[in-house]
Image 1 (cartoon, rainbow, N blue to C red):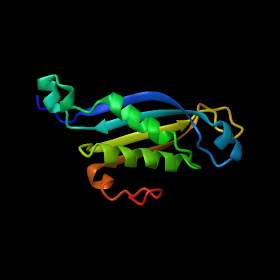
Image 2: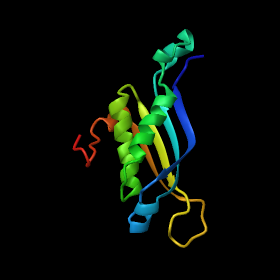
Image 3: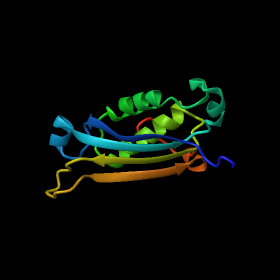
Length: 135
């Protein structure tokens, strides 16, 4: 068989962050879940068993943790910041599928959360510009 694609996943990673339009959300924060799938060419690691030949998911987590710690007003903006940080830190990433879910959103509904999803491939990653940094 021929290997078609390789992905690194971080599933249901929980963060406490300060994302929200309302002042209260930016003061006390809320709980968020992140699901992340990164297309990454780690076929060499299959043969070598060397972490240098893959994408270290602990390092990916740290990049996401530092990025989501910055307060923002919109879930969409926070998700975009994460994408930009990952693209900048790991230029070999071929695709990103990201879902960021705000648990218990303040909207008066009994729901599991409100989410945004981003799906990007290498050709889409290149022109992305972060409005905070202009990069």
